[in-house]
View 1 (cartoon, rainbow, N blue to C red):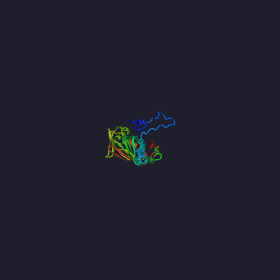
View 2 (view 1 turned 30 degrees about the vertical axis):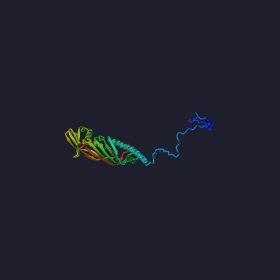
View 3 (view 1 turned 180 degrees about the vertical axis):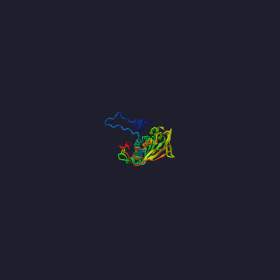
View 4 (view 1 turned 90 degrees about the horizontal axis):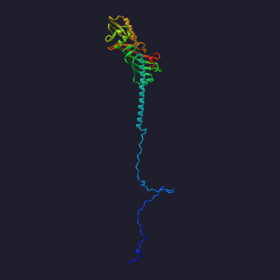
Length: 308
């Protein structure tokens, strides 16, 4: 029988309480009271170790420097292109103005439309600044020269020097001028019909004979045979023969009428322009006029040159 008071039968120490999982820490509700520090939140993740390597951030793209050789070349090319375009524009404008002024003077002289072109070299701007023009070409439309119908002029002028007040009729000088004048058979017929009284109305046509250098004026009752010639620097149609029985006017009456007609070509021509030679062709008559070292009239001397 055991002894109830025996130590071996007594429980050792207080009974052990069962272990329960510890509840999460409680945080006070609402804002922290003045003087109290807010509770520290546990870190969401561990701080990176100091020894851990960080990935390199991408560097911003580098801007192209203006000192880059390619950029410098591009800038220079653009500048040169702009300057070249500006110079070409000024060149074309100045050339057009010069050609327009000369054409206006020619049209005033010949009473027909004209086209003018200056030499391409040297550039027109250089010629304009120096007031020295190497050469220019003039061509009329071919309708008439004054009252002479069917006439066309092809003119070449070289070594033109304008005075300082050029542009307002200041005049100048030219080295040489050569003009080739074509007068068609149809134009001769029309001009003579309008110029010679009575006989002119009877003229029906003109026939040229290059073999003997004559021009035959055809009429219903007879013909007038003339020979183009240069006399005292002017073009003339000399009456050499009258054929047929229909003419009652003597040669002395017809010749002055023809002289009055052809004198219109050289009458009051400026710069001492004279006829040099004449040739009869299958299509009409070709005459060459020229002058050298001539003075360009000023505006007050000839209104046609007021804008030169």
